[in-house]
Length: 263
Ligand SMILES: [Mg+2]
Image (cartoon, helix red, strand yellow):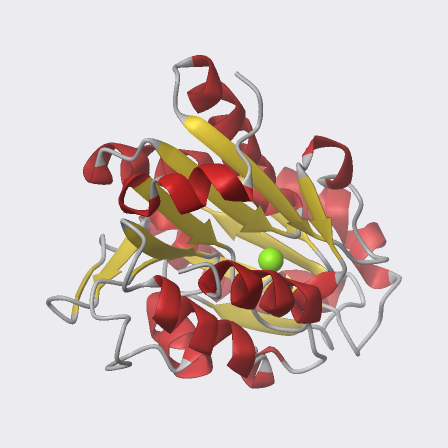
């Protein structure tokens, strides 16, 4: 099935799921991830689209709480049906109920949280930033030591294997989390929940690839799909598979505004 276009979305807004990654897509990547606020124009456009599309969803590696803080989505007129699926879909927040459903912290993640500071220090990497997301632990090197991420990739992968965790590499970040759910599972579940006839997914990084695969597979099942890459100099893995390539979060905001203008 060929890629869907904006015309297909305009023809069937109620049957459309719009799912977006957060960092690098809705928000610029910045040195301090606690300051990565969503693009104001994107949030405003999503509030307009939330009134006409079947479902607007944020699918992010971040915990829900952070996406809410940095996105300013809560209580926004037009986003009263928004869903945020955090930690790759393991944690689910619904604007309609303002409730978050979160699984228990896996035991290997708790063990990792205890052991990781010492483990990093032994490898001369005690100065990286550790982020405890609850269901996952991330090691950040942005703005600290950009080469170190490559040196840590293999040993962290081995450590994850020892603990029964999986590795989620990203832009200057490596995350270790329990296996079992990825953004592809999240997109499939969101499509099913809505009974969506078409899905638009926008992302920028390796963690979005399973969602790209899910959309490609859904196309085979007759669900329309449009894949948007928020491009960066740091990561080009999504470009070749995207239907629409945009130049980072500013261009994503332009694109969302242009779509909202159609209604
Ligand atoms: Mg991202």
